Image (tube, rainbow, N blue to C red; front, side, top):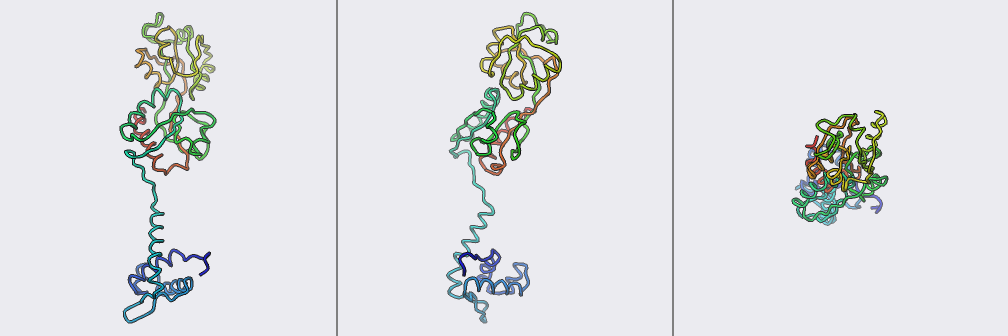
Length: 301
């Protein structure tokens, strides 16, 4: 046999079955082929292996010594192919030792990460989580495996990226419960007149800026922050207003005893999704992480 020419899979299956049943007729029945076809296949296999393999006797097709020697390797190949076809790397969260890197906004550090961490520590004590920024490198990081997931509003991600919607976000205003001038509902006139804290970060911030331009509202910006760190304490100790997505707004309000008001200007809602690359769609660990995120946050819809 030429080493470059390997027997077809069907020939190996024929060899395996014929070794057991010793009958070309029964092999043909079990493989759903005609007897002449099985005879042709057997001829090809004999030519490949340069041996008769089976000799017709009164008791059936008896294997030659060469067939006896080859049946073990043949069955190992077939079993390996069966395992290959059903291959799936198992992921047991209870025993796994692995790092998962998740790209997210700093708002998600406050709203999503604590809950994720609590569940991971309970279910998968050997798992290490690492939070990374969402930026222009996020798509490449997902493709290369440097990052496992990206969670947020990331409409610029391109092809090859799967996504699953977790929940939608509208916009609210956050302020001191004892604000000296705002009582009850926050109206547009009061919104224009008060001082504001602006958060420069956040993947949905552009939607707010577009709404302000569209409604011709110019805010009196007193403070601009790069992220949400410290925002709750600032609102609690001043008379400033912050406009931000509902989930982070309600979370900060609960922790800092602040009041939450509907935003008096119409701002487009956006969807928070988890994103992953097609290369890792079937990878067991990535699937486990995605399922965990979906279970934890899809209820926020």
